[in-house]
View 1 (cartoon, helix red, strand yellow):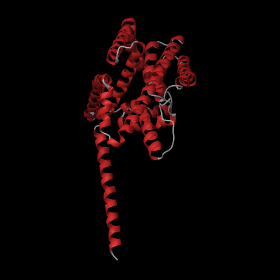
View 2 (cartoon, one colour):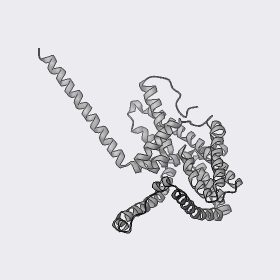
View 3 (spheres, helix red, strand yellow):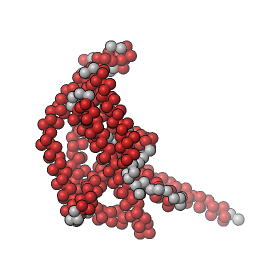
View 4 (cartoon, one colour):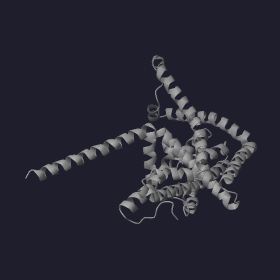
Length: 354
């Protein structure tokens, strides 16, 4: 009579052991991912670079059927020629405006501090200058922070060539790397795994197309608008706005801050004009340019983007904020294909499929 009870206890113990083992494995995987998160972010950025280069090579190969490798080389030559042309035509002006930008930005920050100091609430918001004894006692901390910022900046410049080189290798033979990833999947699921990987690549490629088009439009519109209202350094500020627009939602706000600080040094009216330029560019981009782009590219919900940027920013800093949106694209495709389609058996239009 005790055998069924013993069997039931044994099954329950085995189930508990399985849960503990699975939980332990997941925790170990999470810890491993956390430890190598910088390397994973670099690899993901390199994959985005590879998708851009591969897409450019495909476009060239459609116009001039010369093969993938030759198209890739021609694309790199065109990129280098384009940057070289921009540098030769306006390099000195851009360098001069960047130098002037740092000076004017410092003046704008000083103006904002003086303005805040004229109000009681502003004075309380400003940080109280430390005493001499506090400075001496905190010298070690200050040097540590400066050193950390220096190493962080140097590390960012080191990562960019790594991202480009790895991305170039991935773009040279994308099929070989895709085949290597598929081999890591169990044989019964390899066909589906290949479909998922190809869909992710397609979604990211279309997201890049839309993002680059939006960045170019916002940068040009902002630069022209700032030039019309007589804002100094309009070329550099437009360039910064276009580059920061790679970060949806948050990027344009970050780009407007230095422009407004500089405009405030020339008076409230100039700041009003600059604010209007940025608002007009964003309204035009959101209501005309983006709807035209979204007919073929990938669209994401704004609330999802903001939450992803906040989460990635807390976990991985500015690099996480920059890569938050393409990571959301990957996550959505995985959820749609592996969970909604395969597990739930429901039909859904997968992101990036047209």
